[in-house]
Length: 86
Image (cartoon, one colour):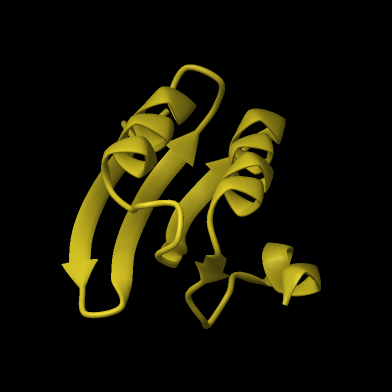
């Protein structure tokens, strides 16, 4: 498994969290930590998941929990596996 990477970028209208590589239960902690330190509850959280090659149910669960805590935007173009979200 390739080591996951999470990068947080401040943008004019919120925060962009860029994820790459593979995310399983152990790796989702990186994503949660990055998202907890980044946006305020009212600012939009943009997720760039175009470089994610694998995400198990724990990764999807984190995305769902983030969506309930922040306005969440998945940066297009989305991978084919996530097209149903748009």
